[in-house]
Image (cartoon, rainbow, N blue to C red; front, side, top):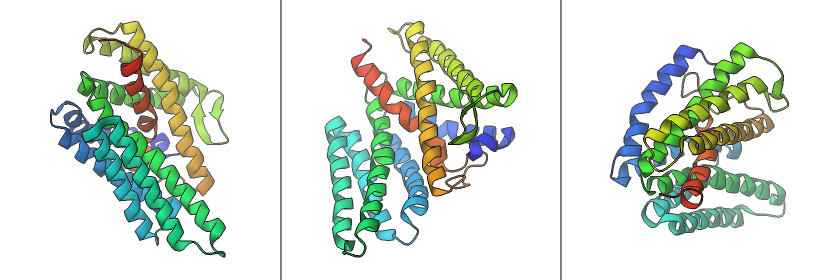
Length: 275
């Protein structure tokens, strides 16, 4: 259970309000350097939480390599598109392989391979998925699509929180997230669908019904991202990744649903809808 499920509403709203300004600026600012800097900062904080909890505080060299991989993946996506994104990710994964070769001994073999697996998961989960924000930004009306995915994800989270708190009912997946309910999931999906439908005013050429359906899907898919992070934390015996954001846990806690929702929006705009 994360702090975003248990935090006081006032604290949750205060943090959300503080985060609105840089998020909107990154989405609408024409220069890609602002969003590159913001995603790099968020990625650095998320990777720090990931590294402390899954790699170990003492492995500062591996954390440094993880950040190099993050920055290469983000910069590749920002300046060279999908090809640059994949090139950066390839180098990021190779850096982990080089580190494994450096520390590998017969006695440490299983532990070293386990450590490499966690590093690879971090690069795929944090660096690669976050870099889709740069790809979405480059789409036609990409700034508005970024606002769309951030708004839908945030309102899905808020709708799930309030619907689940008030309606209660059967649990969604108690083995992983004891507080999540089916009513919360449905409330979040409906809130996401409503925000998607309202976004049609800012995304001409897309029917409100299509965007409502996309919003509903993102409500479901974002919940999958939330559950994935909860499963990782439960496996590691963690409650929150950190307490840097009052009522929301850590940066990784705050990004979990958004990370899952960025790629579907990118592929939806590229391959499903038409200008």
